[in-house]
Image 1 (cartoon, rainbow, N blue to C red):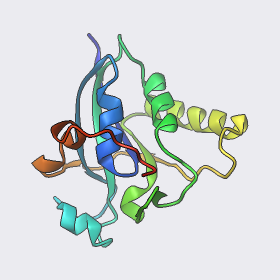
Image 2 (spheres, rainbow, N blue to C red):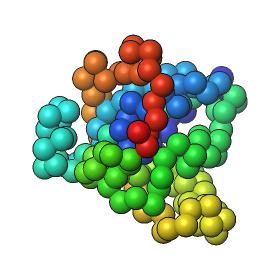
Image 3 (cartoon, rainbow, N blue to C red):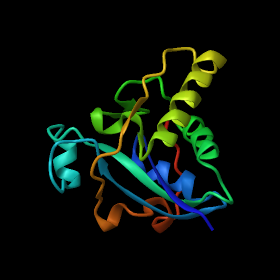
Image 4 (spheres, one colour):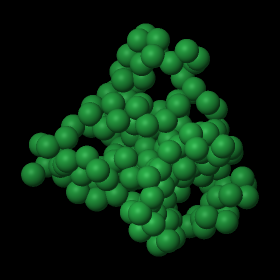
Length: 159
């Protein structure tokens, strides 16, 4: 087993987490906040639009069962990376599209994946996804963890 981590932001973290959790090779997920300037933010802090954090999902996976490249493919398929600071009805910088890389290999793969998406013309508009180094990841409150599973809901990011 080769355990690795990845961090993605693609709108409301509930649906992002639900999509990654169903994949074979995923060991665990946790939702939280990353990319801001505030220490140990709460959901209320992040929703104030003053912290700069994104709602994100940290994915722990067995790379012998699912690769980082495969996770990137899922990332691109579960949200619209062309809407700046927005997914469906959710608007604000906390809903931005971002890949937070943990090492240079992830950075290179994320940049290559984004370039392939741009060339493919799969999306009609410019991709706004940020590819940035991971900073402190602050775990969200317990009630946000596995939110859709706890409520037995299907999640549609475009409501």
